[in-house]
Length: 366
Image 1 (cartoon, one colour):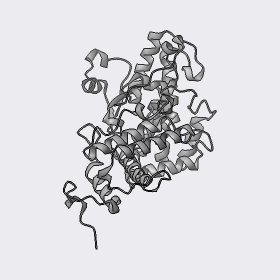
Image 2 (cartoon, one colour):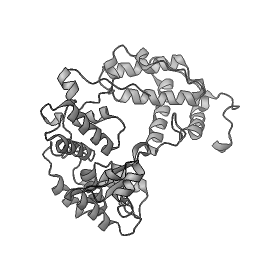
Image 3 (cartoon, helix red, strand yellow):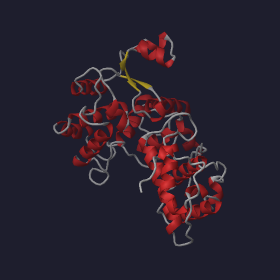
Image 4 (cartoon, helix red, strand yellow):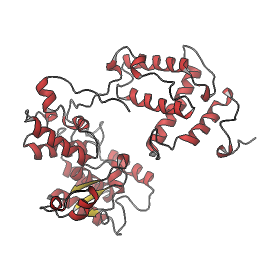
């Protein structure tokens, strides 16, 4: 007997069915998983998949764990199940099998799930489940330089090797190193259409006309595939950036074509890009670098241009706190982040924190 269409099933009147927990969970995910946890908008496929994976793992763990097994309908999820789950995560964290940065993400996804089943207050604050804050405190301060330069990798030589194999992947790498774009942003960029004049950039950002004047003649309008939909205008103000845009335009034949291969879907294009990265050793295993390291390199280069010294993570000296803060604000905006402290993950400890000899505090969870 075939299952009814999930969209036609009323979860509110469907009886509890512990024996069909996977079916019920699929109904819950089908109804809610496309939504943002707190805003009236959708979420990306990565968030969608991560939440679904965690939910499936949670109920499999509750049924098959060695401490106590629970056979329950997902809508019956309650405090005792949370306690068992959190105790397991604490044990895994203490054994070093669960990173401090992973636990807040899992906790956030679990909290979202409890809202879906009508129990938004089910979870206590995360601190109530762990006896040591270090187990779940995410560090936003880099302790090692993850740029390609720090690993001794010649960025331009690697990209030119890639050019001979896949021009779309090469164009992505040029955009990543020149503008600090993310993986997805570089693929979705339309280099013919996504270039704005200073006046257009000023109107879009609310800047005055005076601010639009200056040596910059064009801006890269980055808005496709950005995190949180945050748009940013990046100046095309040096040879590297002009070369990156010119090369991408040579690869993209049509005026509205994106950098990715137009015969592929976005998911296929991202899979292809990852394959090319592995083929040319752009992995932690081979060259000891990953594409995201180009964002670290972009951030470090920007810090040096704004302060005249290397960033702290690369061994740079202490600089004036106001100069350090201005540089971090600029880089945060260019990377598409909304908070200055996030930049510490790329640059290392700020001048203020270093002078006080303390670690930066962890931002509160939303």
